[in-house]
Length: 371
Image 1: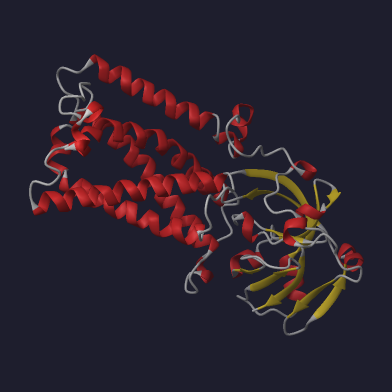
Image 2: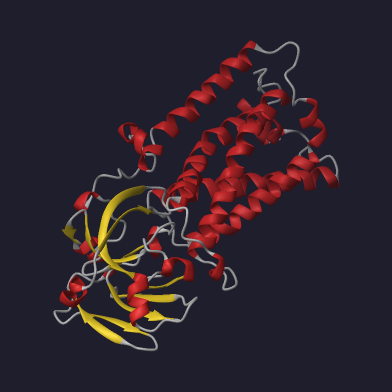
């Protein structure tokens, strides 16, 4: 009975907003945000770590596909945080019901809600920490985030099924509403709008002037582009003086930087779009991947393995699916915005391709291999 004292005593929760109608309205908004976040998260996971059977079907168009889906993923995830907080506030008196469990079924229901809320809180806040590139404890973020997403979504569906009757009864606008409800929902809407407008500018160009709370500004960094992993962090501060691009395939060959610069050069405008939610467009100049592969005797439908000079890292070796390889916008870039690549942007050469996560736009390339 110790928990029933002070602010948790029976009758302490006096606000009329601790009622089903307010909870259902917030639940609709939260459900929409979580649905967008979950579906766009699946897209991101499929592009970053596709199963082997999916590789041949990945497409390089639309050009800004990943920029849009990952931007929506982070925007909807951040918007869901105040929505979840508001929804939990409307129902938290039920956390202190007494007795805690009236039956076995009631106990199972409460355990299910505990698992659902825990998964949602972990999912949203670890995602927020990832946008900041801050991890309070070491853990495999991408895999953890993926499975927490499934756990939270599954738990949400079970919760909706269990509360379906109550939700249906309070879904439509009642004849007489609470004046406090309108004020509360207006305040929640304002909070969601504020965090969205002040963070979405890291990927939505016309909101860039309001980008006050986001961890990135898309125009700040070497050569006007942000950087997640610097050359120093990757261990590639010093590029070998005798650097050569090694191209392996049926007709393998090597090229110096000067020889690469003598090949036909193409300029494309493409964004760098990162999993943390920021993106920025730039003009890239370099050699088409398709031309390098053709010179190596690549057969039709071939894919590519790209290896970086960096000492270690989960994306030191990446693969490029066939559709990306033949896309004329896919380059081995040597310059950005008219300048030779800075070390932090991948000097002497890097991959740039449409609709591709930033972690797969391999920097400091030393080898490409036709598969």
